[in-house]
Length: 114
Ligand SMILES: [Zn+2]
Image (cartoon, rainbow, N blue to C red; front, side, top):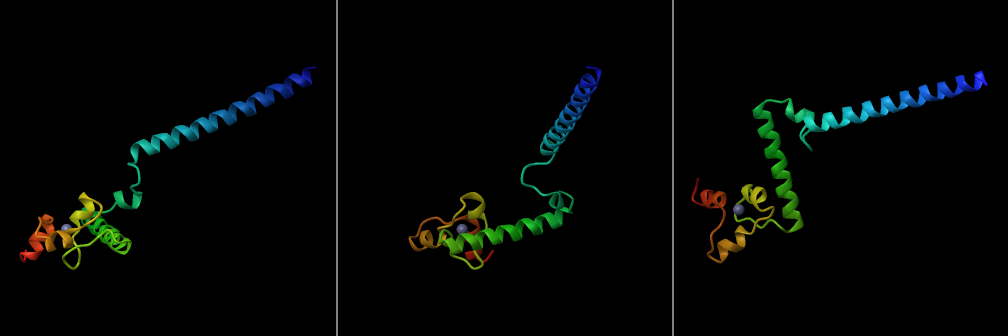
């Protein structure tokens, strides 16, 4: 009887410890996801502003290239504009230019020699 009770209380301690550990891990995880903005790596947040800019521009150019390959980025200048990707996710400046319609500011500036 007494041995049974000891076994029972040991089980409770183990269960309790497991619960505390799990709760701690969950709290830690949520606290971390609250303090770290979603989808921004720690590598990014710890670098200088200049390095952040370079990384963003490289990623933007990569996304533009990907959109070009997918056929959703038809720009009128080379290298293609970046602003259409940021604002629209696609570019149809080439078509608009051919039709005499307004193109994006970046393309407009670059075609004007800016
Ligand atoms: Zn454009």
